[in-house]
Image (cartoon, rainbow, N blue to C red):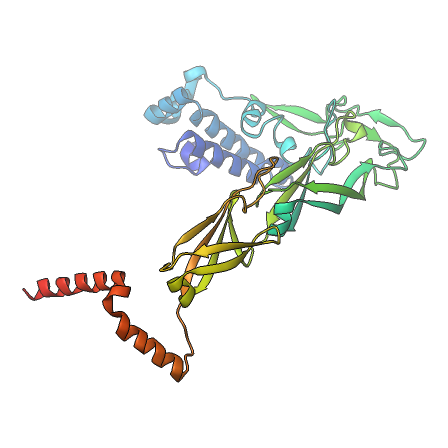
Length: 380
């Protein structure tokens, strides 16, 4: 049979860049790896074809030759006469040792490795803006993997032996040669653990670890922002004893801050929109504004204040993380027009309007003068 076009095999256009080639290969390798299709006799051939295509197109010189001459460029030993080893390709694309590493060693088994580290954990909390300002001490409950008490983390029933796997010699993976390709997969005997347990522990089903709900005290520092990640070193899962007694993982606390009904935050600063009665805006006066620490601040409104005027309160904003300073608070005025007037109030305002004329509303007068000029110019 004639070979399929390499670009067609990867499902990419002929002008695909290196990133697109790698992404396409990763996706198709995950889909068609023989380990995922043990009952499909054609899976191995398709996988070889995929690796062959990527091995050529990912090499700039070989790709150039292929674009000029097609498959003939590699017949009779042309361009070096071969492709990369499967293991080399997977090490470049997936890291480590290939497909077995992508899925944790096949079926969840652990490959034996000196100093294997425990898993990191993630915990999400939501706090109020007031708590973000002041900081907060939290007591959380979180399930953490610990060594099984029954087997002391070894995964075997008391008295049972844990032996090095004779098939893989403790490596957790085996290789097989198929033509000029080398296939590497999780050891079928030990499931990738590198050890064989004759009598698995009944307390943990041979895993060596159990999930234990643990109480932890967490300090949320003052000034924390929405989306902050707090790392608690060594508070994650314990390292598996059958993987080399490595360090515990870490616990990452992800903090989200709830929206506030009065304040909006921008870094260390707070913004507040305050409605001001028309009379105070016109005559001047004082209004009280709440602050994030629960206090009150008086701001002086100058006579003739307009909507949108911004007042600054120094040091009344948020706490600054790991610093004893505070940001500022900005109050934006919104002049409130009276509504629901009774007849007496309406008469007073009508008299006020007659007495005031254009002089008390210069911005309005300027706008409508410009509008009149605009219309007059259209008529001309």
